[in-house]
Length: 105
Image 1 (cartoon, rainbow, N blue to C red):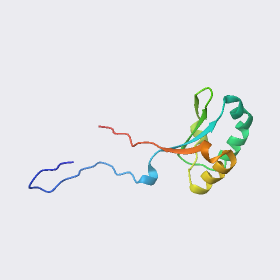
Image 2 (image 1 turned 135 degrees about the horizontal axis):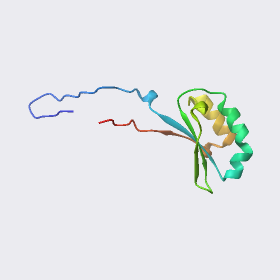
Image 3 (image 1 turned 45 degrees about the vertical axis):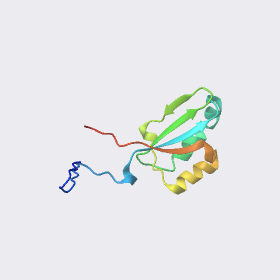
């Protein structure tokens, strides 16, 4: 970006990414690893209802463990799918995290 007194400002960019195409992650939190393992098959069954580029992250609170699921488990975070997950696992345990666009300069 170039801004000077007496001249028009200029903005030069190589790529514009629409907001709906920013990277997002779906975080599902469990109290501990055992509770996740008890519901693991159910989680995967729910995720099978969607396919996309958004990553899924499992967080076990007691152990502070983060498990990033493989790309084959990526989903498309859309409102209805998100509502179903929040209803099933609890609104406070299912969150969407939007990732910043990487600056490659």
